[in-house]
Amino acid sequence: MLASFIHRAVMQGVPLLFGSTGEIITEKSGNLNLGIPGIMYVGGISGVIGAFLYEQSVPSGQEINPFLAVIVPLLSCILGSFLMGLIYAFLTTTLRANQNVTGLALTTFGVGFGNFFGGSLIKLTGSSLPSITLTETSNCFRTSLPFADDLGWFGEIFLSYSFLAYASIAIALIAAFVLNRTKVGLHLRAVGENPATADAAGISVGRYKYCATCIGSVIAGLGGLYYVMDYANGVWSNDAFGDRGWLAIALVIFAVWKPHVSILGSVLFGGLFIVYNYIPNLAVSTQEIFKMLPYIVTIFVLVIVSMRKKRENQPPAHLGLSYFREER
Image 1 (cartoon, rainbow, N blue to C red):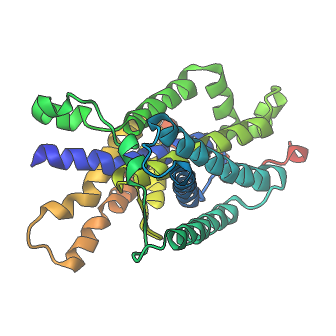
Image 2 (cartoon, rainbow, N blue to C red; image 1 turned 60 degrees about the vertical axis):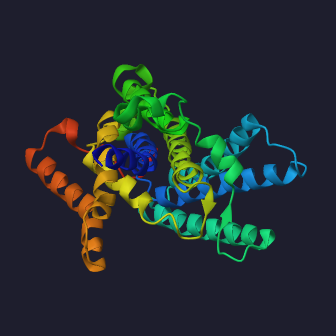
């Protein structure tokens, strides 16, 4: 029972880890991207479109190529997420639009974009259900280590996940290393803390903001792809993604803007999100209370961090503010 719970918590937490890692990188540049839920949605539907087009191109009766079944949706997801990040960066960095409004607009646009193309694909398949299923592509994404089942609880907890799950952990660790141990990370943090000083030191503020936002968006988009192809077994249903994008943003605060902390935080959030399934005879109204637990924990952490006032646990000083070079 415990091994099964941890396994499901990890799977539930992987999309959150992708989203939070991407948002942390973005926020370190001073950009507060509240469009992460929409970007994750676009990442998911872009992968679905790529997978659908590839499966349709394979002649009837012929098996799909596992490599192409993975790489086509993956590249589609990366392209869609990158364009969303590019739109946000252009509006907030070049045009200096309000970051909060821009992020919320991207979320609204992303959900509408996903629902429109998701509904269109469902009509193309002629499905009687309001969903589209890409089982063959999903099976390629969900491939795990062949010997995991032979190792009992250890294999179920640590070795029974797809490559995207392990990639999420690797990306978080690499992001933590880059932010804290490299010159690029130092420059990025300088841009988020005091862009005027960074600009005076010869650091290209605009370039760092663009790169951080676009890279962060691509990473967040992978969370949407993982949810559809792995967690949901290749089934796309409009509005089925829920509030995972907002949970990813909450996880950023919980992890105090540290990617490596968000690894454990994602498992905790994933566990809190599904714990009601393991409590017998729980009323539906009570289940909704349990779904609030990740947000309650985030508020608690935010209060504690604010009271302690340690600078290393605070958000970037220039977070959410546009930089005007003329004011330097």
